[in-house]
Image 1 (cartoon, protein in one colour):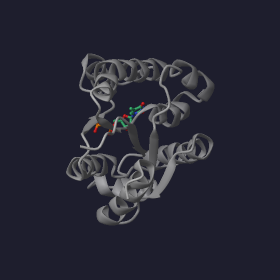
Image 2 (cartoon, protein in one colour; image 1 turned 90 degrees about the horizontal axis):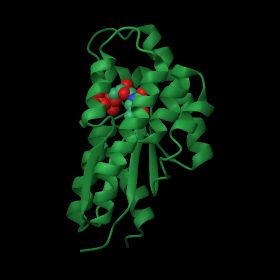
Image 3 (tube, rainbow, N blue to C red; image 1 turned 90 degrees about the vertical axis):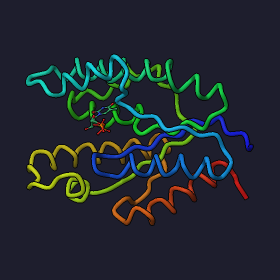
Length: 197
Ligand code: TYD
C-alpha cells in the first residue's frame, strides 16, 4: 500500500460534475493502491442538516447562511477530514472553503468578511476547480428552462472562482467536456501531485 495522507478538494459551480468526478477519483485512487475516502460539504452532520433546512426557507439572512457554512466546515474538519488524514487516507472533498469564498462572497458582497470567518480552514494539499459555463452546468442538472437570475448568479460565482484559482493556485480543469475526458485530466493532475511513475 502506497502512503497517501493528502487532502484533495474538488470545486466548481453547480452542474460542473464535482460529485461524479470526486467519486470516480476515490475509486481510482483505491484501485491504484491508495487508501482514499469521499466526503462532501455541506455535510450530513447536525449543522449541515440545519443548513439544508434553512435553504428551503424564504428570507434567510445571507450572513447567517455564510456563518452556518463556516460552522459546518469546522465540524467537517474535526469530525471527518482530520481523523481520516490521521488514519493515512487521501481525503477527497466535494467542495470546501473555496465554495464559501466564491458563493458567499457573491451573496454577501463582502469577501473580506467571508475570508475572516473561514480563517480556520487551512489550505488543502491539492485543489482542483472544474470550470464550466453556467449555461452548460445548469443544463446538466435542470430539465426545465433555466431561470435567467440563476445563470447570472452562477456567472458571478464562476468569475470569483477563477479569480481565487489564480490567487490561491487551484488547478483549473475545463469541465465542459465529457465525463471521461475531464476525468483523464483530473488523473493527470493528481498523478503529478502524487508523483506516481
Ligand atoms: P451541493 O454541492 O449542490 O450539495 P448537495 O448535493 O448536497 O445539494 O451544494 C448545495 C449548494 O450549497 C450549492 O448551490 C452551493 C452551495 N454552497 C455554498 O454556497 N457555500 C458553501 O460553502 C458550500 C459548501 C456550498
